[in-house]
Image (tube, rainbow, N blue to C red; front, side, top):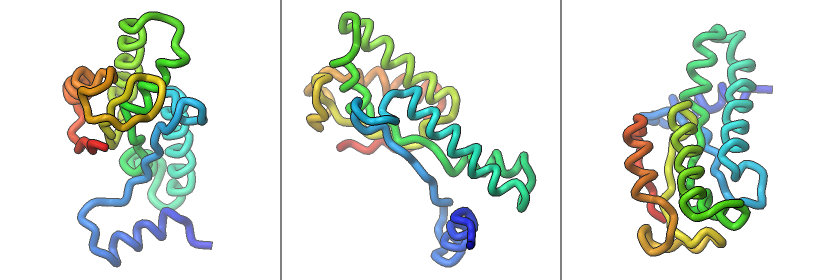
Length: 156
């Protein structure tokens, strides 16, 4: 069996892709595993470990770790993260501070590779235009840029 990693490399060469393919799990809904920022981080970290394990015999451990970190990053959706508000024990300011702290940590650790911007009021994924709900979108964007995020922002 050919490794999915080798297939991706061949796909990139065959189709002359400018950038490598990236696997990017997204924090979807608060009721599903992977939505909480720490769960999302765990998915990315464990996936990187497995990719590096498979690659190491071919390229060495250091290069395998580097490739895995470049190829597996999370899609962080601020609107989805904002739906954790319905489960949060604390006031609105405490929730906002918690959410921004979690996002900042993900960015600092190199977990975020893609960002979705949508707004809501913290109870459902309403996909409101940014600024129409109460998700801390402006603060989030400023914060992750300050922490080094250079990617694009997808407005949903």
